[in-house]
Picture (tube, rainbow, N blue to C red):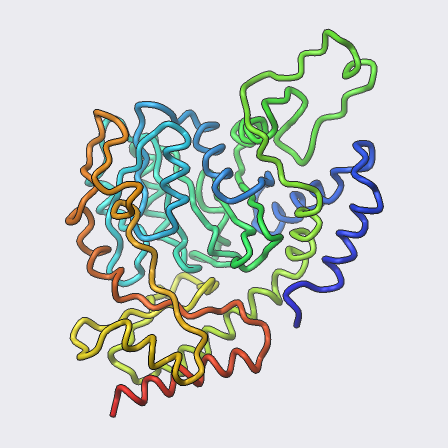
Length: 392
């Protein structure tokens, strides 16, 4: 199987053949949004230039801005926190569950303040957070709940696909994701009013846009009139280009096979660590189906060797290398010790989220985006041989 197939190339050629004419353009984006909404069991899907702009626009469309706080997990790509700052709000960090490594609802409860207006959960590594508990908290406190599902295509929670669980869900088509168009993003929601606001946020506030795919139909006698009022609100130019939409459409049509490769690779990694007590995989609850953006294990804290020792041994056996988890957001140089607002309720420093701080240095991420079976087998064999070395 190829990551990029003839289908993607054919759709790109269609866009190029149309020469970006306005009268014939936009068809790939409309088709992509309609299909994505169907696959992710949502009434609306709105495409974006990337998966950070998605969250920024959704937060602003939901009324979050200056003076507000948004609760987020610290263990994820910093884009989640950046989107909060882009909206003019301040992130508040809640700790994670020690087994699933996703946002802990009880920690969220303890972080709620009068300034709290939203929660962003992250489907970490392809595993849904405890969304029922988080949505219940959202209802109790009238909070907007967003699911950052950038790493979770066709993950499931209690029989429902991730992307249909929150007030809005955000996806990314960045190059490492299950589906990619190089860059791009998507928001799904069932709320028509929110969808309309989000689309206006990503389309320069154009009055002609609506919740559904694309623009409303406007006759030339209207749009060519010098008195035509184009912008009903302030917005950004966050729209997804047709070339990216063409690739993302083909990838969405191939979603089952692309996700299946990730799951198969994860299954092979799981077999390689079977019986190894000092490598602990992310716990997947029985009511969830993991989509394995990456396969991640925790190095036990009582081993007589370091994370770097294991990585070096893995590479010596033919492994391509492995990634550590992101530095916790609030300990990144852009955040640590910073006060973004005088009223900020947290000091961004060690001790803020003890469970995440203890876990992060011991996580090892193994890539699942390799589609060549020979390369996959080589990585799995390297892991098995590295384990044997340290078991001697």
